[in-house]
Length: 498
Image (cartoon, rainbow, N blue to C red):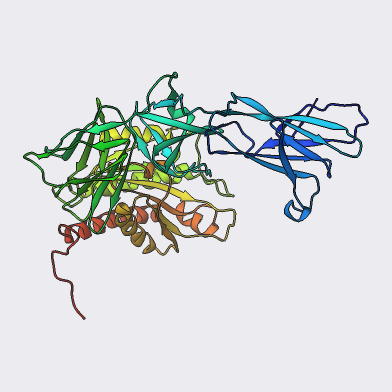
């Protein structure tokens, strides 16, 4: 036996046999679950000029060297899973035969493959307060691109698996991926979840307008906050309308003419227009099997006085963040700037919440859950950037949702007024502290600690104070611009004409 790369090779025949398999693997080389219509792809590297097969008799094709990076003996094959195929977490078998001397080598993939039966749906439910869906299987240091977060105990129809993620069916021709650690597989025998919608209601209290949609199961959903005009769109997957009326009760102040569309037979879309151009956040979750959407109203006084601002000093404790060649640590810089910014905001009358006030290790997931409980009006997360190229420098701001871009832009403009070079205002940023939809949020990469000029500024207490003052001014600019906008994005004052 011999372990080569990702494959466990079981070689057969005498030691002098000429047929040889150097590696044999699935592509990708990880455990997979496949359903009818999916492709099982495999690759073998071995003695050139042979006849290669997998799964018994299915042939592999030897690639010309021009298609294999100049190498010979690279064989590839594809098998499309058919209804009725059975394969239960088995390694894939390979064989390579040389016609010249009839020697034969065999191997098995290290990864295992399972064929799913449509007659036995595999279901799972989300667990924990921060379950989420990904668009696909891509990864980088920020993880896969997130489609959105889900409440706990949402039932998902699993139709495949690659490595540590399950593929789930949302609707006809719509799929997503969910990490294994945020779901629990259910025993066989369950039905794929669907629901008719009941007649729903809209009401308001002192802080929120609330939409409630009765269902018979906790179905997955996706939301998007559009701009111009500002509209919250929520798709409920697996739901079909049986809504015969929408009751709009007293107290509604932020939502406009709410309505719905059945955009597909199994996709029910809520369309929730907002009265103000600047959205101030929303949350989605279940109360029993009723989907509850809470839309936050703008603060009564769009000024710093009375506003609740959350400050996140990035990293901390064992998580030091970026470190300069001279030993300056990001965690110390962010805390120093956050403390100065806190004093500036409190002098202006704001209430300030801190995710950490000392050099403590605080998990990002915990920070998100803490802020969910504290319910700030907005959030600024402070960081210091780093690059392998010491010449790279400048300041930048980051946002995930386009509706929160005005906050990031206002902060960016003021940060540039310090004399720092502009590195950009970055959207669709897949960072945990930019993930919440409950409040406008922005991440500020103050400057590059890896650049000697930027580092010198960042470590100067007077420059840190200047950053705090500019960030406060950025918040004031954001609030001023928000005041200037009326419902539906129209300016309250006629713009000046040239």
